[in-house]
Image (tube, rainbow, N blue to C red):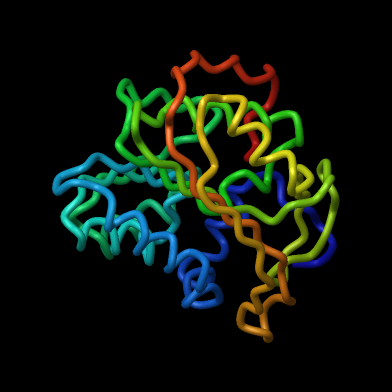
Length: 225
């Protein structure tokens, strides 16, 4: 790969394909959150999986539980993998910053989809994701926290720029968007050590208890998630 920095999340994940799924298999905080959600949703509930990747484990678990799952991802490779591995889901090539679902969902899952974009877009995208949760619905969210704005690093053998927000900002922003944070958990996860080092993960579970506000349009400019 050399020192060239990937230009977009699509480029990164087109290159990773199923390698990403193998490296992050058995992520405890994610599996626990999915079990928690499945116990609370009615049969046939509508769920949106933001950054659906290969479709496993998130969409696969939700489809297996009897829910109607839509997945969006910026990587064409990931979308094709998800369609083949989870035929019961509806997977679409889309960017969280421009996607218009046309409906709200009983639950939205967003596991690590906001890292490969400028910091200004992280906040705007979180607002958009929150707006897609129907009244009484749930949000499962996870990220790698930190005050980062397009910080260059090497991850899984690839050079890229990552952004995030400090850990306390995520629950505070969700509360300000009409969601009540029900659970917060941080943990260190070690992916396949041959591929990546340990990561600090922040997991949030929230529920829509306040009004749904129309999201602020994200900043104009390149869409290179």
